[in-house]
Amino acid sequence: MWNATAMADDARLTMVPETQTASVRIRAKNVSYQIACEEGERLLLAGLRQGVPLAYECATGTCGTCRARHHADSIVDLWPEAPGGAKLKSERGEFLLCQSSVRGGCDIEIPGHLPEPDQAAILPEYHRGRLAGTWPLAEDVVGFEIALDRPCRFLAGQFFLVKVPGVAGYRAYSMANYEGETRRLRFVLRRQENGRFSQWLSTQGAPNGHGDKPAVELFGPLGKAAFRPEEGKNLLCLAGGSGVAGMLSILRHAVEIGYFERHRGHLFFGVRTLQDLFCLDELSELAARAGGGLEITLALSREQAPDERHPGHPALRLATGLVHEVSAAVMAGRYDNTVAFAAGPPGMIEAALHHLLLEARLPAGDIRYDKFT
Image (cartoon, rainbow, N blue to C red; front, side, top):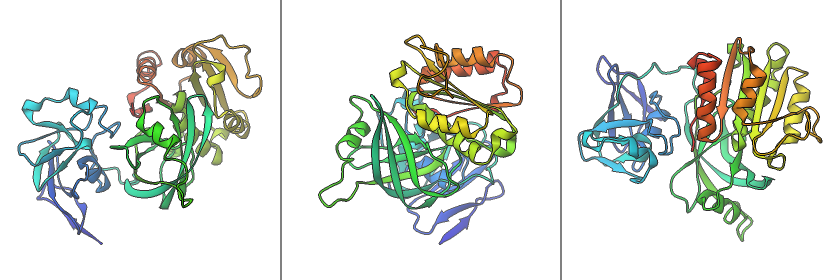
């Protein structure tokens, strides 16, 4: 059961669980919310699950976007070493909502204004699940699937936060699959030599002695880089490495509804060499099902493309260069009625945004990306 509570005249109606442990007032310049925060719960996640449109990007302590202020000692810092904390002004009482909880009731301040809540948004929730399997995709890339304890919905291009046993904090991963409602989430991970999640996946990811798979915790869906078919725009997708996961979800949804019968689609997928490519069978299938409405170009940044087409997948074009450079050359003068999605390493994202904003002159509202790293 849920109780609806609201502040005075300037408040929005929010839903608060009856088992609340702390009452938190979130104040922005234009609005005030009252939410419940469970013991140890991250304030950002508490607010988002209750419909408060708080600003965030990575939701994992890296970007520093979810900055807030407090004037009491009730804030509990769950990760003092969070990279996003470098942007905070401690003398002003600033902290990261995604890495903080509370000891008791308190007031916090959000800089600036908060937007109106998106009434059509899918509110994020906590989920539990189990690792259902892993499979190699490339030398340093692996796919993995989580089976949820109950169905969920998400928009193609969104992501979930994933927390596994023995690894502190959440990791953010875009879904590579798409169904209207599903109990299976597929992800793509670029293995890091000293990455604790990578290590967990390769060791604890195996079944235990009872044949069970390890349990995981999740929160989502999250992210603004979502495909909305009702917008009726052409699609431009730029992906670097494992960033192709969210693009696969977007393109799969588009193909399923026949979107490319009326609109154009372009995917530019960048890796270092031909050997680093992956998901080629799936990309070829999507190109074939799109009936000519989807062009897929594979950009090789560290070796010369051997031909104009992939030798084993002729539906896929090959090009030489950084993915944003290849995209700029192919797309010159073809940005009309287009929404662009970008995902990949931070340097690639920055370069892509620079081109899309300053050279392609796409409106900021038609450029969508999420920062995970």
